[in-house]
Length: 394
Ligand SMILES: *Cc1c(COP(=O)(O)O)cnc(C)c1O
Image (cartoon, rainbow, N blue to C red; front, side, top):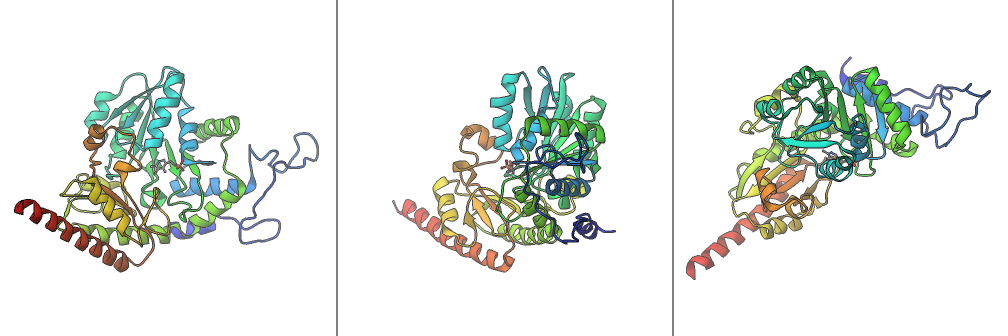
């Protein structure tokens, strides 16, 4: 069976009533017949039937053995890092999600876990940076916001031969665009807040483990630390996932069209999208991803934060907000929003210039989105021309 079919039919109908929609088990505990004799559920932190449907579903989607649902993407990351011990090291992608960087730096370093960063788009850099103490390699591919791609297959081989785990944050590709476990990773995490739930209406996180042994360890951490996803948000995430293949295809198709349009706009300097042939890691992207998702970034020849601010305040269909992966299109200005706390020089090293803008292409008609962008750049283009004329006259 193909994925869209497998996905829908991995969501069981309710064995008790035949309800086709998964019931929301809004309960904290389960009545037992005798001590320890129960129907597979005893206390809802440890296990909840609604959450379990979601957890089993994401394991199927990613091709892993066990899935786990957490209260947020960051709670999912937290659970994976807790596999480590004091003295262990993490080798992480340098272009990492800001929240993961903050957690590694301000929470885990004080418990004796050291984190080093490398540009993992070049496999040699991983080989150079790995040490006998490295117990976890942390990748994001594509990264945020400049969509850099790392070769998951090659880095999985390095991890394996160095006896260390590979975890991939697969938020940007979704399980429809890429399955890191099938490429050799040991663990996958998602901010389910984004494509999985898909409607900008909740915060959730997922961990998928490749093997039952790793799954058991994550299960222990999930129960011991307790950052579980509640039954209602689990239900909403299941409902979101039912349409994920359709949505992701539309996000990807529209984003490809928009990215190609952006490359024709005069005032735009760089367009970052893995589906563009001149993307710096295009070959690797095509090798490991089937679709490229709805996130695009671009910057302007006139590298000015003011001009970028005008663009993001001008659009009506693209709403100004952080986050991505929802039905409605969003855009943001990383330099003053998501990447504000990163020093300017470090920001520039990863391509996040003052004029960089990130789009999350939603499910609107792509032609309408392109029309809006065309109007923005016409207005901006005229403004830049006028400014340049005045400066030459003076
Ligand atoms: C949003 C995001 C996270 C964090 O997820 P939350 O659900 O906001 O906690 C982690 N990684 C990536 C790539 C993200 O985009």
